Length: 86
Image (cartoon, rainbow, N blue to C red):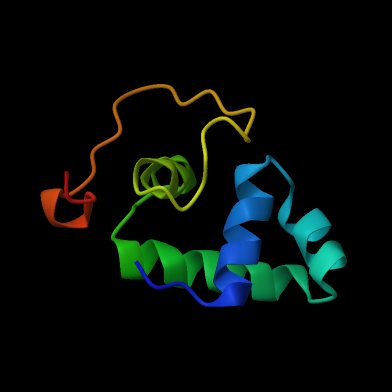
């Protein structure tokens, strides 16, 4: 997956459990811009929910599960063509 630097920064911030407002303040952008980027990431990666987006980022190696205090509950369904090759 090729993400822009800004997309990666936003994904990391959200993955760490920060609010859109907190991510926006850290990056000197508006919360609406954060929401826009999250929406575009969800469309691009075909993830219907924010937990699915974060889960896919971890499974794909974009985010490290060791770095993030996440508890993913339920079943994470990731399309086969988006999984990293073994």
